[in-house]
Image 1 (cartoon, helix red, strand yellow):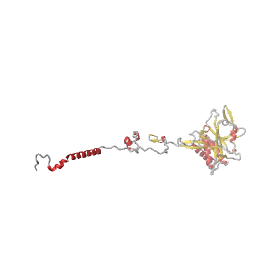
Image 2 (image 1 turned 45 degrees about the vertical axis):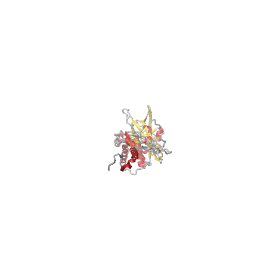
Image 3 (image 1 turned 90 degrees about the vertical axis):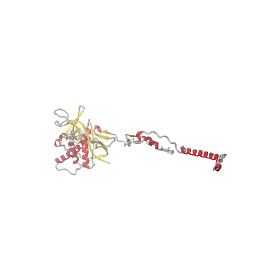
Image 4 (image 1 turned 120 degrees about the vertical axis):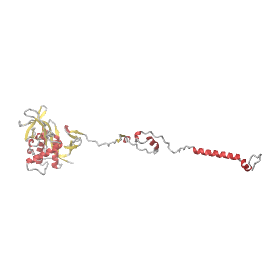
Amino acid sequence: MILPEDTSKCPSCKRSQNHAAELTALFLCTLVIALTFWFQLSTPQKKTTDSHTPERHPPERLSSSTFPASAAPREVAAKTPLPRPITSALKQRPEPVNQYITTDRTPRITSKPSAPKLSATRYQNTRFLQAQGDYPFYVAEKKWDNRKQSYNFYRVGMQGSERVIRHDVRRYFISENQSDYPEPEGGCGPTALLNLYIWYSKFGLIHESVKHSDPYTYKQLKFKQIDQIINRIQGNSRSRADGTNLVEQVVAIDELGRKASNDKTRIHFEYKQPPLNRHDFLNLTRNYRAGILTVRPKDPMTGRLMNYHAVLVIRGDTSGKITIANWGKFSHGRIVNRQGKQWFVPDDATQYEMQVERLTTLIPFTPTT
C-alpha cells in the first residue's frame, strides 16, 4: 500500500506509535533494576561478627626448634585454633615447671628422697666400719663390693649372752709350730686360730660331727680350712699377701664358729692399743675368752724389730704374768714399759722379746633375736 505524502505515521501501527514514550520509560526502569541487582551479586559482602563468638588473637611466634625441619611452623600455628579460656571458678593445681624441662631430649627425672643412712665410722682406724649404737657384743661381717672387687668389713652390734664354762681348762691349750704347716713364713695368724679352735672343739663350745682319727691329719685339714677362709678374703695366698692381719683373723674365727654351731655361737671382738695393764689380761682369762697379741719380735743378734707377728694369749694372773702360745712352745713373761713402748719379756732368756702393738680380745657368745 502506498501512503499519502502528507501522512507522517503508518496507519497500521498508529496505536503503538502513540505509546512509544511509555514503553521507553518502562525499559529504562527495568534496565536500572537489572543493573543494580547484577552489581549486588558481583560485589562480595562482608560477614557480620557474631557477638557471642570469642575474639581470636594472632598466634604466638613459635621457635623452629619446636617442630621438625620438614614442617611449617607458621602455617600450623595459623590453622590451629587457640583453646577457649577456662571460666570455671575452680582453679587447677599448677604442674611443677621443672617436671617438663628437658636437656638434650633427655627428661630430667627427679629421684625420690632416700631413707637416711646411719653414719658409720672406722673402728680404731681399721677397715671395720661401725654404725652408731651401744651393744654388749660386736661381730665381724663382710660384704662383697662389685665396684672395688673386694670385701667391705663391718663391726655389727648384737645382743646376746656370753658362753660360760664352769672349770678352768686353759692348761689344755696346745701350741702348734707354724713351720709345720704350709707357707710358714706367713702362718702365725692361722696357727694361732688353729690353737684356739681345737680348744673350742675339745671343751664343748662348738661340735664337729666328723673328726679324723689321726690328730696330725686333723690339724692339717683344719689349718687348710682356716687358710681357705683367709685366702678367700685376701684374693691370693698368704705368702703373696705378706701374711695375715687382724681383720682376716677375726672374720675367719667367727666364720668357723658359726659353721660348727649352726649360727648359735658368734665371736665378739674388741681392740685395745697400748698401754695395756694387768686387768686387760685378767679380763680374757674367763670362760671361753682368749686374746691375740700383735707384736714385733726383736732380733737378738742385731736388736732390730722383725715384721708383725701374732701370738695367742692364753691367760693372765694377778701378779702380772701372762702366758702365750708361740712357735710350738708356751712362753711365760711380763709386760714391761721401755722408753714409751711396751714389751713382752719372757722368763726364758733364750726366747724372743717382743714389742707389743695391739691386743685383740675374743669372747664367744650366743646371739639373741
